Picture 1 (cartoon, rainbow, N blue to C red):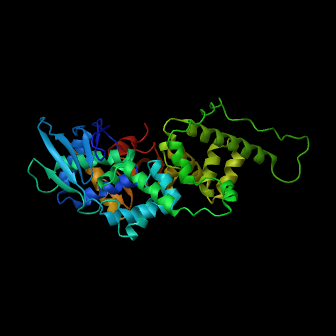
Picture 2 (picture 1 turned 90 degrees about the vertical axis):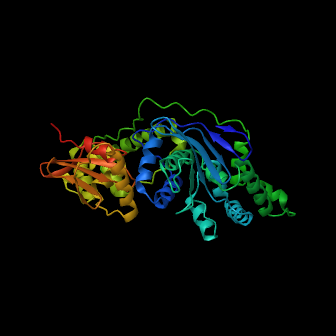
Picture 3 (picture 1 turned 120 degrees about the vertical axis):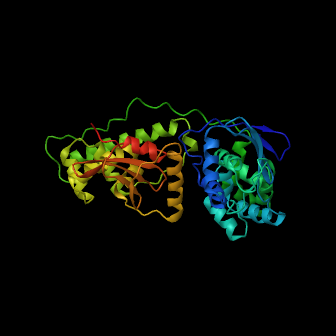
Length: 422
């Protein structure tokens, strides 16, 4: 990434993106919804997605009010492509900065390259639409199209990837560079700070506001010490074996829970020290029913597995299916097994778009859809759309649908993984 004008940034061309979504964050998805809901011709958007996926979008220049890139056709023809976005007025910036400065959590999240959904909601309530909506992405291309063409659509898809990495790109489009924005937040935070009182010496012991401490850490304080090395294996809890069985809790069950807790702590630590951990969203805490499935997967004792199945209202067979689903995808995998949900119209539209992209160059298979499940009765295959947007493969065995693999980013890959076992 290079910077010329203080209010312009140029991002190097991104590599091709075969078989992956263009957005992972909620604000990246909102950006793409604005494109897909605005374009009059969905075919142009589909072609643009293929162009972006092939790596044909050059370096992207971002400035207040617009994006520019050179996009090449398959024959190598280059097109100057622009997408214009309405800048905020001074009054809109005042309202947005006032909202952000009033909540230290908003400032900390922005510094961590995260757009809190609550900030966008508060801004919308104040009349400031942070994310673009229908008609807000104004296309300009020298190919001659007056609406979105494959070139402007490809540019928008590529920018969704940039927004995932750096949401300040969106704020620059709205008219403020990162430094100017942070200076404005700092000035408002200082103005909102309480005036010094005779008890200032007492207040000095109250600590440092989180937003100021976080900002100071970004400003050049020494880095944190390195993380500890991951142990080779989970710790071993003490044995509770006794000559006589004590009254009270089941000793075997307590030992199992202690061992399972050590294994889970080891897994969480391994995730925490793995590269990229800081960029991943914090998962929701498991429900009691989900945790019972996780524990069952850890248990070798048939009695423990049976007790956990009974405690969650599942039969032994249902619990074994749940354990298999958990092994392929943890809580989302279990949801794909048990959550027979009905997608709304917007989700179905995105699913149809993914379907068209997955079989863009060949004939799509004929599957029967019931809610969020697409089935081929003749081949014994089924794919399920999870609420998180991934596709889960299933196959039919002995009259039951069995999870057959981890999730896939597109329906074609999931359907291939759903082939019945030999």
